[in-house]
Amino acid sequence: MAIPTPQKILLDTDPGGDDCFALLWLLSLVRQERAALVAVTAAAGNVSAELTFRAACQVLELVGMTDIPVGLGVPVPEAEITDAAHIHGADGIGNLSQTLPVSARSPEQAPAADDLLIATLTAAPGEITVIAIGPLNNLAAAETKQPGILRLAREIVVMGGAFAVPGNVTPQAEFNIAFNPVAACTVFASGANLVILPLDITHQIICTSAQMARLTAPQPDCALTRFVTALADFLTQTSRRYRETGGDRGFLVHDAVTIAYCFYPEVLRFRRARVQVETRGELTAGQTLIDRRHRPKAAANAWVAHEVDAAQLFACFVEDLRSLIASPMVKNPATDG
Image 1 (cartoon, rainbow, N blue to C red):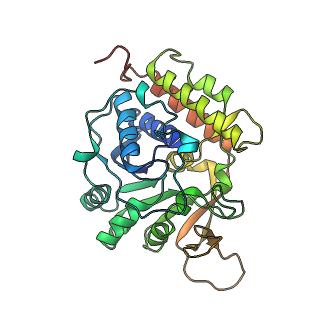
Image 2: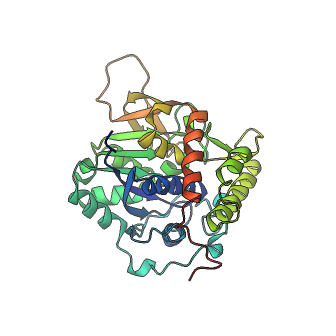
Image 3: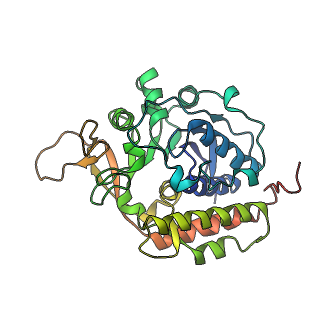
């Protein structure tokens, strides 16, 4: 049987602990030749755009994939929602950046994220899936600079929003949308082929200590194992502190659901809907809304996930990351130059 052509992915991310796990899962699929990561665009969100850029570059350095272009996130207006350094650490990655290999890439010399998005989608119209796991600043900037550019994506897969569950930064709003509601509104109105993976399902995706033990078993002393173990410990502590996991020993891996959708879609169920974003509400800015009334509606703009098989998702997540950890390409900053 012929091996499928690797799926082309552009990842827009704001590392972020769970962003790192999503990135590593994607890189494991690149190593297996199931995915082709054509670019990474770092967004301001969990921490500043400069710090998310540095984190993304260091993770790529750690796994030996330094040829992937990385764009620096666009400037954003001052947000009412602050960053999430209190959840993810001052550097966005559990205060672990000093344990990772140093990247030669600098924010000052990086391409702008919106320009990299435009160039990448223009070069391969209809071929690239954009996975957006941070605030939608970069995507909105690209759409504003070149209207219609997002419609050149094969799909835009967004981790964001909350519909039938509470928000995680306000009673109504999820962080990625609330950080820049106007940007989200721009993306949702772009006419692009949208898939939305909200808190409604990601709250069920809890990575446990048992899953981490299996994940790290192939090489317990390698650099990547040490990094993911320390990051998991950090996220577990913050998950407990903010009561996110119902007392379970583990942490939420919100962003990993986007990788599951792209490569293991059988673990999810969706409904078709028109998703809108509140941009002006005093108490509801960033809220995502679906009209569930049985009456004629304006055209739908997205597929929205409403069920997930978390056990099967983690079966795939763990086995793929085990294969990456076993890879000889992972760098050890303690011994490598």
